[in-house]
Length: 427
Image (cartoon, rainbow, N blue to C red; front, side, top):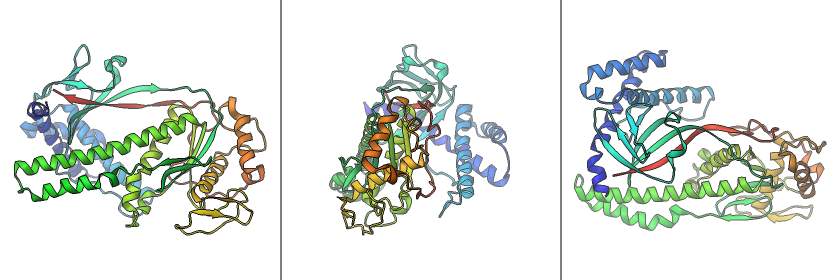
């Protein structure tokens, strides 16, 4: 099955390769003529098709989408410069390889039953069967805005971008939670509950080492070496998918079970500079977990807040005094008599700071910024756990990076975004 897919998709592979030309040419044109607009770059793509006959085979919208990738890289570079991002700002680079080609609303066609995808540009990639969990029958053809064909280690995938409004309503649970992520446990919440860290990369290191040895023992340029590289890539792909699946399910469970979620806005980029912990931190995928928390918070109308991580582990969650500890000290012992696990204490502090950052009026029970049905219950839960005086403590630094959801005081958040559905392309 996979061999047939590779043979028949040679046209798609060529399309992805030729999509590099508009990307690199656009970047070169911008470097030579800084200050030009996107429309000028689109015109440059049209001239490219006339200059290179093989580039003219690529659909016009695919050339434009390739040029847009260069534009996004340029915009990201200037955004990093304006934000004074430390380190490298990410100046756009010329590309040597690519694994994707993107079409807008032309150059492709879906069959009547929406189970087959046909590409109609000059490369004649052919007709392909779509296999996946997403049912395209729910969406009209004009709702499909883009189709991107991506080559992975285990085959080709069609990423279908659909413009829909996704809004889910849940019955308020009346629960709040603060989350402190870690390495011993994936996270510890303010109730003392823990989620085990799966450590997918660590568990797969032995198999990855064996596959890497097989690659190094093969002759360079041989077919057997390519096969060994493909097996190694499949294993790495499986680990990344396991990590993503765990982050999605864990974030979804946390959001659906609580009306208010507070978590730390960790600077993972700086934390991985510690070479002793870098692999474990990367394997935990904290940033991916935080992104899905924010996404599901918008979809389900829950309040999700990222708070600065300063002093969450050092402060006592009962009295607010600082108790300095090293990273090896795993138990919080305060003079007020509070004895808690280090992560449990931090999670309680995160919840308190989350409420204060949301600018909740703690003196008036009527407006807590959560769903109206659970306002009194949530306030009572927090006061019972921490006390009104502890919550009224004004000491909290301003947030950076991720922040509070835009509509904190609304009863229900709505989400209007592009839903990406990944559908496997098989023949």
